[in-house]
Image 1 (cartoon, helix red, strand yellow):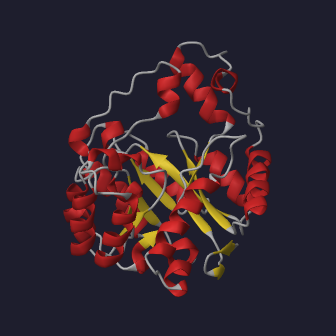
Image 2: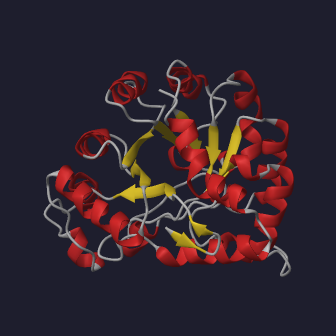
Image 3: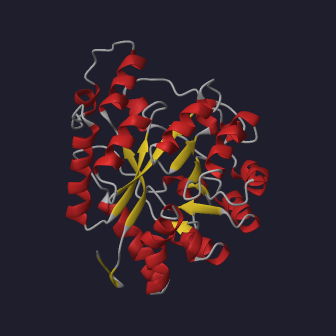
Length: 304
């Protein structure tokens, strides 16, 4: 892709795969399984075949010059959709899946997901109301630890699911479980597992930096508009966030992401452009930009 540094190979570490099953799950939660959720939201209805939806995303990546993307199954139990997308386009996608470790079959589902060549275990402690130090979480993380070339994604900080708000669905999340510091003993216990904290900690930026400074296996992803900065002092801009992240972690542990999700909007180019502008203004060398915008992610996930 053409960038201020010249041509770079771009890999997006954070794209939600809103499958047909995703929308059917939301419809069920509204109490009306026949509800046409995409129409209510004004979004494109995905084909029931996830491989066809994956093809739509390939077109989006091609149109924007993006080489790869990590697709996230955005409801528990939707591993099959992302696995089908990865199987259809193995050179374009990495697959992540959302896991609730408090469910009885969590370990089995995690094993099965990794066996189907998915690469990222996504944990949302605040959403599912558990501590990341819970033994049930450790059990699924252990499955990742046994699979080189995988990572554990842990959402921290502010958690607001816009689609749920638009549908009038409650979000009984528990912020007590959203502090990145909670990951510290877990990252130490699994030193070979890469832990990814998205959105720079989503409001817990200081804590995310402390965690990453203490644990060399912790990475931050840069995804979304990072609107959480409005909770910080006025001088704490996204430019400041990038500068401090580079100071503490270095370029080798930052993963570019957009948090793209629905169609027809598709790949969120504005997030990429904004982050390019910031990093270029910070005199980030081309080699570091190449690492952030793609090389770090592929290095982590193409190990095996």
